[in-house]
Length: 138
Image (tube, rainbow, N blue to C red; front, side, top):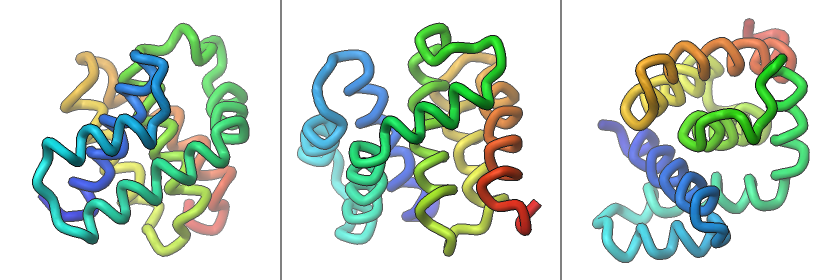
C-alpha cells in the first residue's frame, strides 16, 4: 500500500468516525494517529485532507448532493458518504493528484470498508464529479 493510500485511508477513517460519533474529523484523526504507527508524510497528507474537508465541508456536501440524484447524503451509507467527502476534497484541492488515481483510490477504500455495492456507487458519483471539477482530465 502506498503512503498516499495509507493517508487517504486514515482520513477516511477519521471522517467516518466523526460522522458516526459527532466528534470533529480532526479530533478523530488525532485519536486514530495515536494508535496507528505512520510516517510524517502519511500523517501530514491525512491531516491536510481532513483540514480541507472541515474548511470546505458545505461545498463538498453540496457537490455530492447535486451529483447523487435520488440519494440525499443522509440516506447514503456512512462509509460511502465518508469516502466521497475525502475524494471530492482531493479532486477539488489537489490538482497534482491525477484524476484516475483519486477515483481508483476512493473506489478501493469503498470496497474495503463499504458494502458489496459501495465501489460502483462511489465510482458512479465520483466519475460525474470529476468530469465537472476537472473537465480537461476526463
